[in-house]
Structure formats: structure tokens, C-alpha cells
Image 1 (tube, rainbow, N blue to C red):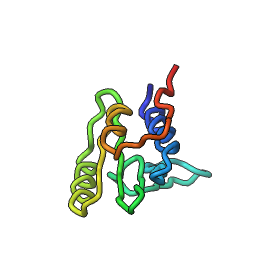
Image 2 (image 1 turned 90 degrees about the vertical axis):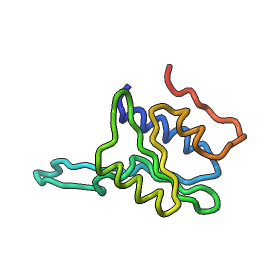
Image 3 (image 1 turned 60 degrees about the horizontal axis):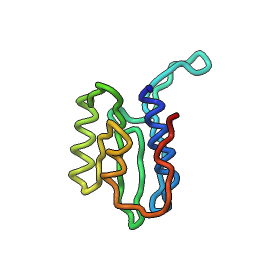
Image 4 (image 1 turned 180 degrees about the vertical axis):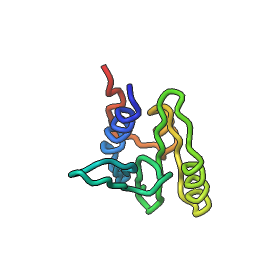
Length: 112
């Protein structure tokens, strides 16, 4: 599995929950219509969410031996200093365990 698929797996889980709103936060660069374009803010997490009640959550997905960059560590420090939650996830269970318990039935196995 790639990190991109891992992010999709996290999003599929989060989108089932009715106690939060989430969105993919793309960061990167590429050529679009023969122009070099940068998007997102360097170091920001892969997924942003807002929990019921207004708490902000940033989720950084790392798959395999992936490590946080210095910019990602700085973003984590800034987020946590403001009282928001930052989740560094190496597996879906890291996200599930870090968020408030959710008792509605959910699909948590997305891979065959």
C-alpha cells in the first residue's frame, strides 16, 4: 500500500463518522497546462477535521518507514500550542484510538 492509499483509507473511515467534518489537504507541486504550480502550505498535515464542538484536528499519514519532515514537526508544534489535536498515524488504529469514541457501526476494514 502507498501513503496515498493510506490517506484514502483514513478518509473513508472519517467520512462515516457523524461527529466530525473532514477534508483532504493536498500539499505539493506539479506541472499543470505547461505551468509549474505549487499548492498547499509546506509542512501541513494530509487531513484536516473539525470535531463536534469545534476542536480542530490535523492528521499526518505516514506509511511504512515514513518520517515527519522538519516542516511537519514545526506545524505539529504550532497546532498543539494552539490547543488543537495532531495525530501522526502509521495505521488506521492510530486515528481511531486518538479520536473520541464513536459508537455507531462503521466499516474499519477497507483492504481485501
